Image (tube, one colour):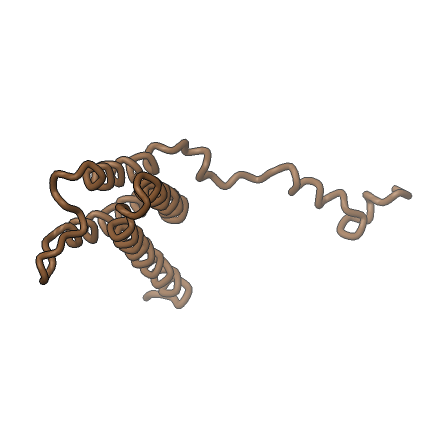
Length: 145
């Protein structure tokens, strides 16, 4: 029998997974549309967007979440790189900036995977111990103790 708490947890994880895939898709769409604007700063800003959102995906769901983010990113970028209904192309073949966006975006996702594991750990800091010395919370820590 599935409890309500377990069903809620599964629902939350499902929403997180969907959010990470959508985040990858949005980063891919924004980057594909804007990577040629204000060259070379447009592609640099788009690559930083991919790196920041990849690190967010890893922090939120770990390496498997980063994989889901990367799948969402690559699907949207590859779909937008195809010829459109009017014959227009967002990532023209033969232009270096398009290759920088495609390969650089994949490298930014990989950089999120190789970021130090310590960035994603939740470790208690010294501030937790300072709370125990508060005279309101601990009467033995007051001036008369």
